[in-house]
Image (tube, rainbow, N blue to C red):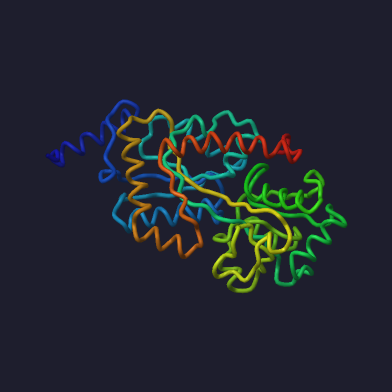
Length: 326
């Protein structure tokens, strides 16, 4: 039997005062949830968080979802904030591979192992983009110039060392015979800053997620030279790296974590809410619109995945000679 409304409100009030001690809420009672984005507006995390927040509300899963940005240090500032919010059952953070890389490269005081894993949501390949007036008409021309003088062909990305926009060009460089340590990688704080750098020719090319630059690609401001997926991306007239004799396949992923110290009912409520988001028609429509691959992985399995990713990234950066990058 459902408790009277007054009893529910009293329970919520106690939760605000004593977030680490009060009982949690089932998903249908979650309200005024905040979603922390650990980098700037316009980034891939930001786009994903805002689309997810709208879908949560439109599907009547959570009422009153607020997205806010706390950029800095490739996501480490947001990660530290999450650690300070111990027991806060109304806070989630949208994150991904970039935060795993940042915590490794920067020896973060709070790591993802200190958080509560909620779910992995999506995978997304990277794209290699240039301006429409770029001298590089295809990937072969770009790689030829890059091999001849790596320092004269800087690449830009919206993630710090170890993040997806950094790893993808390093893997490409290694595959085509360029030492990753010779690559000039310029880091920008998210996709918005990177876009400005590309358009103002501060970099020769950029690497980012497709969803961040869909409008600029459609309008012709940017040209895609390659996609890092195993297969071509519908709606983008560009071949894969492998089709252009570069043996690299690479995907980014994004998911949700929460503060440490949550009650089991809070954890269950959050995981249930994200599961309902995943099953909603609103979210399925977003997946198709932005070309995201459904990579849903719940709770404990996502926690295991995060631990494996941390180990994989440490090995990968070390193998590329970039263990001290960043």
